[in-house]
Image 1 (spheres, rainbow over the protein chains, first blue to last red):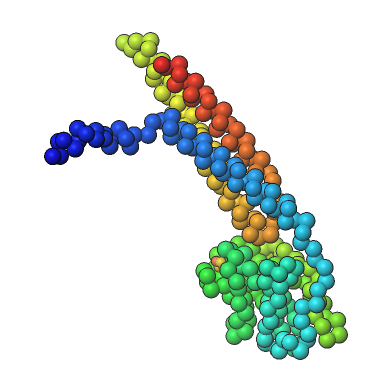
Image 2 (tube, protein in one colour; image 1 turned 120 degrees about the vertical axis):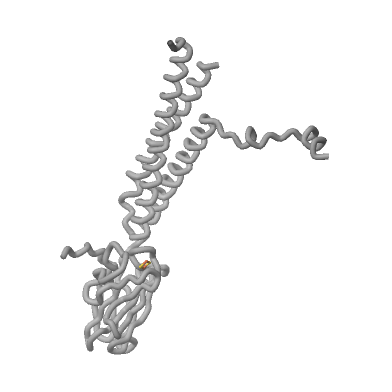
Length: 166
Length: 78
Ligand code: FES
């Protein structure tokens, strides 16, 4: 029975699974084409997106919305750019992007440690300047520039800070 | 003593393996470029995307050129 089956369907697995050097070369070249197409796609995507971000001043909260030691979420400059506004001391406001500079998890404010914490890989950022305190994030958090106008708080722009040495 | 045909075959084989390794190296460079661009984009810095795309296209061009070279090499053998 087994012999009969083999004769009717003469499949040679070794030969069937054999990949010639030329096929492998072709596969690598195709992979290279895919990567090149991906890179071009990302370049096009980034240049389309670049012109769209505008840092118009925007009212983000009322002074009374954020208690001392409390925080408030807002979006700036685009609706998908989540940020957090914090009042660590009375009359002192700071705001940062909530997107962790490691792999983009949202960071959260920890008033008891006076820091912004990323639960994904245990990263933490300073409340005073957004610098990395611990964990894998390679860069500080982007800081939102603020201005208090009367009873309203305005976001004026976003500053991408450099890593402080030492 | 090797025959001329054997020597040629060995030479072709060595050339092929050399090209294959070079191809692999270019693909690894492209992967590295891709990761670099993604990391920069996530960080809101798109400046690297265009040079990386040009670099990646050059690598692809070289790979295609080598592939046709390999096809020619194989044809010569037949
Ligand atoms: S994503 Fe924030 S530490 Fe990894």
